[in-house]
Amino acid sequence: MKVLAFAASSSRQSINKTLVEYATSKIEQAEVEVLDLNDFEMPIYSIDREKESGIPELAQKFYDKIGEADAIVISFAEHNGSYTAAYKNIFDWTSRINMKVYQDTPMLLLATSPGPGGAQSVLNAAVNSAPYFAADVKAHLSVPSFFDNFDLETQQLTNAQLSEALNSALTQLTN
Image (tube, helix red, strand yellow):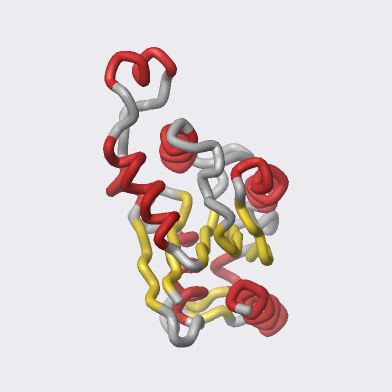
């Protein structure tokens, strides 16, 4: 099984990247590729820019990576209640190739934040919009108060209930 994973954030210290790496480390017998959105930085999308210069090669590369995957795990960072600008821009460019960005690939959607909301607003937006972009969301999970529920030293979820929920979500993704 080939799993594509990324944090929907461009932060080099992203707790969502920590979460997505932890989650995918628990998938047995899988080849996991963790993308860094910084490797897909493109000009801010606009219809005028698309008409003048076409779709950037990096958008096609991102789309192709999705198409090669058997499963996808994304952990969403939340900026002002919504997607990060980095993720939204990559998504906007990629959707110009094909609105079915996720190509019916099974997905696990995660989100976390330092606060008690656990980036639930952006996770809800992602889950609710997923069908429009051919995402086969098998499960989703918000991890609130990241630093209270995740031990950075041992790189593990410390909250038993969240750990069980993540294991269940991973089972739904891989079965």
